[in-house]
Image (cartoon, rainbow, N blue to C red; front, side):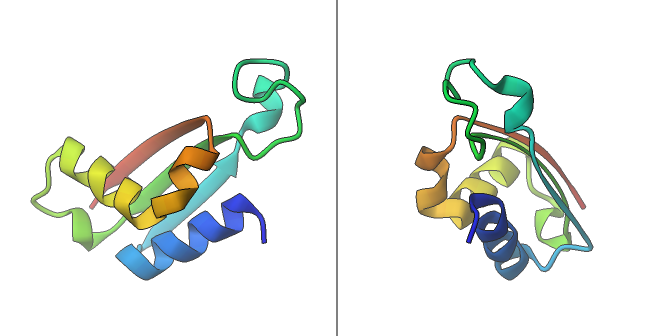
Length: 85
């Protein structure tokens, strides 16, 4: 299972999102820090829309996602999050 697949599964389970998009943007960063070999699965963009974020600050939402991803977070170099209700 790829990191992107693991991310999707964990985020689906944690937030029951109405929208979930996980994009592996690693190819755009080949040769840069965190992706020196260009092998991928290092840079991700994630968009989530979920009622679970209602009433939560931006920082709280980010913390919720990092908690849901758990041990995946240290395995990636960059994670851009777009989180809303």
